[in-house]
Length: 189
Ligand code: 6PG
Ligand code: NI
Figure (cartoon, helix red, strand yellow):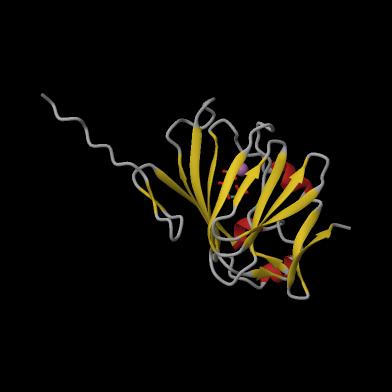
């Protein structure tokens, strides 16, 4: 008899959120990749364009676009500022607008910034163990408000997709800024 094939399952390190195993894809976003995301373009220019702002590790057991499947990922945002804004992700709506997502914070301190289709923006504080349900029809972006790496794990439908264009064109209606030492949402003028 042929012995059953040994399948190496992916593995999460619960101290850091890091995913290990075969089939894990990593995407890196540097300062150069984030032009137009931060309000202070001058402050961005003073930073090394090659410096990493965040990294995403994703496990896709089915093809992107498959209905009924789920993806798993982990995001790691470095600590840092661009002017008075914290290092943050580009942010997106899901291309299929009604698709939701879960985030669970592993390490660090941060904020999940959420904007609905009526452009109402709010945020939820992220700290180790915090569970965040992102409803459908809601753009999401995360910012590292602490001094160490912010990491969180995520689970989302394999047919959600990413719509970055809407955010690239109009942004969020409010920005998370350091106001007298405290992260606060400031409405865009
Ligand atoms: C997703 C998740 C998450 C997200 C990263 C990076 O839908 O895939 O929301 O994995 O992609 O945190 O954020 P950006 O995709 O906005 O760069
Ligand atoms: Ni998402």
